[in-house]
Length: 425
Image (cartoon, rainbow, N blue to C red):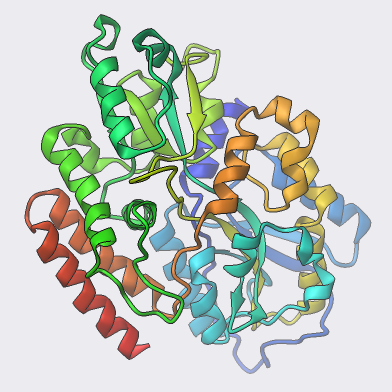
């Protein structure tokens, strides 16, 4: 049951928010306030987060935490959180945000600056920590993180006599050999997340980054008029055109792709760490249990670059109990708590020491690959209007994948749209 529940947790792995109410005549925000608080977070099907909250509550009877489960789906979660912030509601004290929203929420003063010394920041991975900053100041704390991994049918690669690929060319060559096997009849080569949602933005950013380019630089300027950007989009477009990526993958989010791989329909699949336990379940729900391996995602000329996944914890600027909220975040993101959390959940933690723990490496054999991926991963663009930028990327990339735009036209369209967003920030 625990393995199955992880799907619910990770399928909404990219964000969380809260709905708000009018605070009326109350003055929102109290940096030194203490007392019971609310924690707006993702639903945890494993039960691990509620257990950790219960431990806190036992030790802090006057500052108990109440969990508020937030809706599934990044778009709806962000909308709820924006509504809460715009009404200056104090209904939530600690909020869970998708890492690329950090800049927007900090710039709009919806979350508070956090003191570095309270959170032992030296123990976090560099990339998640950088994504938690805005203009050199810390506004949220990495809670969960993650990089994409390439899942592959180890049994079929062994039969075909090929190694796991590290480049796109090797990926295609491996598929040609594997799909020629009688055991691979009816299978497709590769799929990631290609539906028109945040996952498509992530997959496109990865493709461009894995070709040596960047979609948006640190100053918020787009770079879609480069050979690297063209190579990244062509990898995806050509994949659909020549059948390397199956036509039905145009509807794939995380769970649709996971099911396709788990049912034995794909040789290679790009996804997050959460699907490892599900695909390896020995209860009859997976056709590939014990038959697959993982490696870093491939790139144009070598190992690719993943977009950084994960969620951060922040203190609402409208909370009247911010001192307690900060203490709770420090507790939940401490090394000891993360080690306990990792034992009960496949969600990737944000402190590097978690990945060297012998017991956890035995429990989660993919940890070395995941650690390598996280260390090389890039945060999604840290810009105030990230939501608008992501929507513009999705529209153009999706049109190119469906053959409604040429690669050049889609890139030019993105360049114009993202330039306007940068100028209007």
